[in-house]
Image 1 (spheres, rainbow over the protein chains, first blue to last red):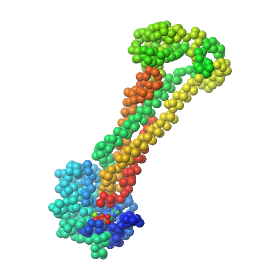
Image 2: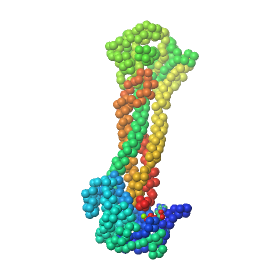
Image 3: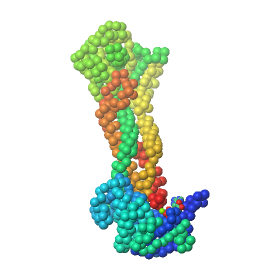
Image 4: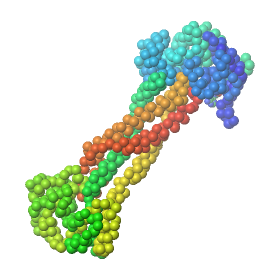
Length: 225
Length: 382
Ligand SMILES: Nc1ncnc2c1ncn2[C@@H]1O[C@H](COP(=O)(O)OP(=O)(O)O)[C@@H](O)[C@H]1O
Ligand SMILES: [Mg+2]
């Protein structure tokens, strides 16, 4: 269970270009569901997700995860929580060029220093699960958009996170690949993962696999705006 | 502990692949770095060899050389002064020396002609008509034992000397232009006055008595000037001294730090590298992990450069006879000595060089990386 209480985020505070990207969001998110945050560009979806995923801190308000307060942990602990709890999939895939698919998938585990054989085994299992085994030793820059996004999902899952956060995962995919991706997110839910997606793509938020849609507008929940 | 080592292995693994992924930048950096280490190490190894060599040679030279002064200039020494010195306490031996310079137009070089002093441990006086020559003379005139060297004396008379032996290679730095000959030949060749020496040398066993002896000499023979070996040694030390070496290395280190810092600054962290750091952080790497990984990257690069540079310098100084320094060395003796220093490895020297090359580089590179690594990882979501 993720709880947000009056969460706010301001950029460039006190300067001329001060901007309140999130202006007070209170929300409970159920585990093992696919929740989509929808809303026009600039409505604060990415900012909100990055706070939930412990990539950044709210300016004020509180975020807690199963009763543990996330929002004022020191950086080290924030990273530990992020590493063990969240997996991220980004709009631009954010794979590291020059490395193979397999290396990219294993990368989040390096600082945890698991046994190398185990790690490889886990990575291969994930790649097989997402139909990417044949590409394991290809360089990531040779992948198509759909393949890159699947590689990114494998990478997001390597440390066994409970929650997967995907920011505009279909923005660089055609409709067929987008539908496929929504299907994959649904499969993750079946595996017991909590899935949080930001998207303004109807293919995503109108999908039957989505459990809940939260609409944002100008940094507020649409129902509060 | 095992986990610690395993983590380092993962990080090193990643660093190596990161180095390989940007071969252009890293090869260029490695090249510059290696070159600077090479130059610094060459200078260090070379000056230290010179010092060792010079110290070896000087260790055998006499404690006091007595020169006669005439109008403030070095003048020939009357032979009778040797007797006038008389007995001075502490002086174990004294004798007059015959030596001088000769310009050989055929080789366009100056030779040092010398009569080996009586009782000299290294050189015996050649028989009349015979000479012993240094390697430089032998080389330029193409001479070997048994050949004849013909010279035209200052007065225009021709002389021919038979080469009886060559001087040993080990002292070549100072003996390369040396020609030893008998006293009779020397006096005839230069038309040297029979009642004169070039100078007088005195051997003093106890180093603490040297100054006392010198004072007595100045009193007894007011128109002479004693030159002490310790003064010469001090002059040498001023030239090659450790202190100066250290200053040199310090300066070199600064230059190195500057060059690499400037270079790294100019190239900076590329957009790609910053993005990569952001991605690593967003997928769960701590700032410290990123810094450790980059530390390994720098360490691998600078250690490689250090060892390459040092090995190249070692080969350059000890196997190629410091060929790059030939122009500098040429002023040392008129005939360029084929100076082959004896190889040595000095731990302190390596440590100094290491500190002044690897350390500034590490500091210079870690700062921009640290700045990129502490930024919030949410930047990659945009
Ligand atoms: N790092 C930042 N600095 C300044 N403004 C930002 C920053 N990040 C986001 N913003 C602004 O905050 C607002 C919300 O952005 P974002 O959360 O990315 O919206 P969305 O993902 O819904 O498009 C936008 O107006 C954006 O320009
Ligand atoms: Mg966004």
